[in-house]
Length: 504
Image (cartoon, rainbow, N blue to C red):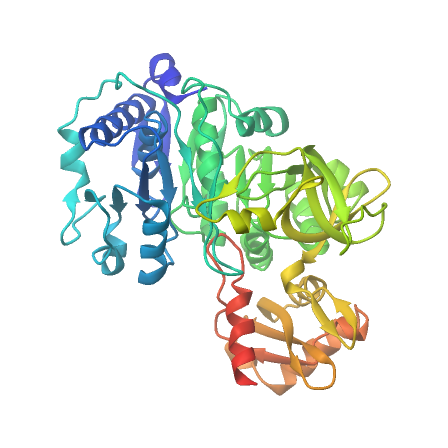
């Protein structure tokens, strides 16, 4: 249940591979480096419950640093590489981080960040930072005497406001105690010593970080991409005979839009489990992925808060297309605006009663706002249960459009538009309208910028109207060279909405 077990059992087995460079760490080397990190943490006076921050791109040292913190009782905050200086400094101050580790590729911002403790540069020089490699090399590779369980505290991506730190209680159990997530990964996704897991997403995000660490709890091999590229991803599955992976729907879309001959070029027969989450997946996208990859596609619905967890396998999903599954953590309750529990088939805000404990760091009011004394916690999503207890998502409450008194969920139009052959990415949201209150607007990233213009706008509106009620369809379409989408697949829709609000 911990890398140290496999450092003793299979010391020469590969624990981590960086796909683009071929750099590797064995379990013996992973154990040694994580111990040196723990020793470095103690050498600088940090104790159980203290916080360190990572502002790092995907690299060989990322996960070993997290394991070093985990075995030291340290709270580790992995920060987005997309943050502005103000956002990054806010997180450092809000988390009370006492140590910062940063990548030289982020030096422009990292060099300006202040923490009340040491700053280390990992993998190259940053002005004013100590060299991480030299610092850990000077530390012993033996286990610290006072090991205890640490954990992550991850900040939301800020898609709907200021980033919020999510923290749960530190466990009093031993460092090799089974985590709830590891129990789920063994039960649902068959994590074991024989697995080869390809992670194509930034490690600072909750799912890539937590699932990658679960791979090491199982004794498998973790292959990390520095940056997702659809064809490169397929080549890596073939090269490493990947058995497990986790993606987001935008990655599915990008792979599906590769030429047929490109998709057919690679042998994907080793894949047993392809997990997806983080954003709603259009039904047609998932059908096409199952047609291509077979019944390997597994979905879950959860959040950084870990207050609830739903899961669905491919065979179940084919019987109930569009579901995100049934709950394995917390009882799902659908509430109306007056907090009444709604029956099956009725849409409302989704709550999980009796799920995991969490709080927003330094923000008791925000914590209180998402928790109900009887019905548990909500992620802010809208959906419904069917008669068999399967959950279906409609959209986020914050994205709902009210046009002429009618509630419109933009995810429906987005799911249609993203399948148009000339569309690379799309965002649908409400913009102010004098008579209707709001009207539906689409902003599209075309596959070929030369197509952008009135003809494509008319084509896309007609395409949407052929599939949806007119009230749900965009009244106008604008074009952007690139939408503000997070590397984890989440769209910064708030930035677009704010931009259009300012135009009024």
